[in-house]
Image (cartoon, rainbow, N blue to C red; front, side):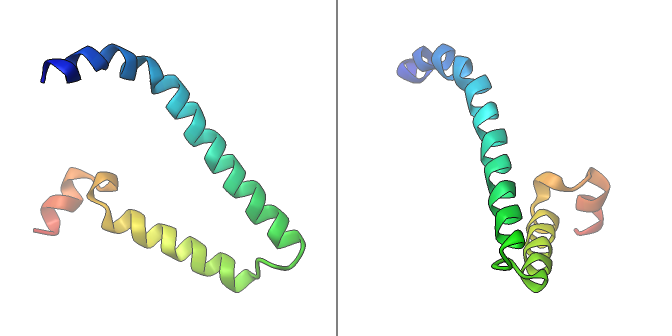
Length: 74
């Protein structure tokens, strides 16, 4: 346990880098999708399936639900 506590300042210092990295990853994925759409490799049906999968994942993940939604599902 003490070794974990010793690492906390270093991990906290990495938070801005991690959050920037996530933003860059999302931007990269969006640029790949855009390029694939322009070259007709990413069809409208694939786009619909992708969006549906993202919505399904978010709706099943309790981290994205409000307290009222969680209480209603019980």
